[in-house]
Length: 454
Image (cartoon, rainbow, N blue to C red; front, side):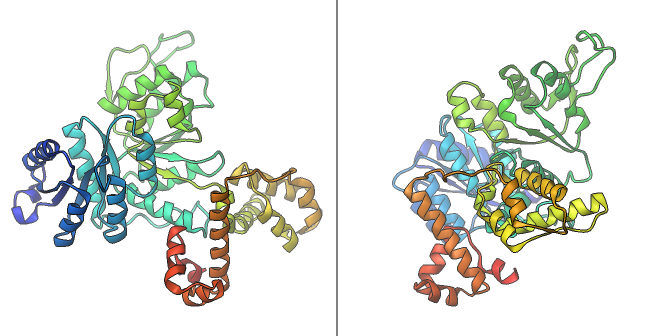
């Protein structure tokens, strides 16, 4: 434990919230013994009153409480004390709530019964994250092209998570740029000068994946003519990105869980363990909650990988980025080929904006590559874009609530662009008062400053 905690005046204050007095007493004793200064609350309302009196360095709260549950308490803390990290305590099986909370900015969640060492480790990381910390190196997220409010929020979460060493799970549809976001987290972390190694767990045959990850010794199997370090050892000191983790076979999930628990790797065919220091960032397009219910994915491994989560929005929810991405791809192609930069006609750009992009950014890149290859002129015509874009057909029906939400967000974004982020003027155009319009912006995670800078 650090010397900073030896002086009572320097001890960080931890707020424990649980409606079970036995849990409060047990956790208080554990944290006091570890050198923390602890205050407790038996309800969400009592916790908020405590924070009004003295802001805690971190909050540890149970999920299941009455009348205010942990999620409602977290929402109040996020609104009034956004820099206070919150750790949620959940029972096994509360996956849906845990995923929802981490997507909204919760620092971490721990499953009961609480492991004392894990609690201290996560709490120390939360306290580090709550401080100022070192600024990431310049350009850490330059590979991600965006002007989207949703993406700016995800990048801010990524920057904050990078300052700790916890495992992160990135969710999102195929083609949304999960590897780029994982690389950005690595670039912003203290491991930035160490290796970043990515492996697609769904692209490697199951019988080869174990050797690829953990290595093997000579003679471990037919064709193993020499010892080989796996990707865990290759990434030692840095970050290992496990893409499409949901496709990993169950037998390898058990071995991966052991590595995460013990921080040791045993190569295939060996009887000796090798220590390894690797931060794990994983990603999947699958619904792991459904996979766990179908017994295709281990729940204990899920909680180890998903200490914190970043959810990437599909391209159809960040259409303001389509012109930027298209321009970036056109510039990249020109630089690679040595040809002049092609331009999209205004009508062609509108067609790209109207398309829903089920394949997301990857599909947009492929379409731009095809357009450059087929266009006989520097200006890419609307007619050519119409030929290249696949038939979209009738739009898929979505629930009325979702359709209203998307329309409202698109409407507000359009007005904010028109007014350059002037909320008063935007509210006037929308026929709402300023306070109501600001609430609508907050509901859709929109910040007027971004529109002024744009």
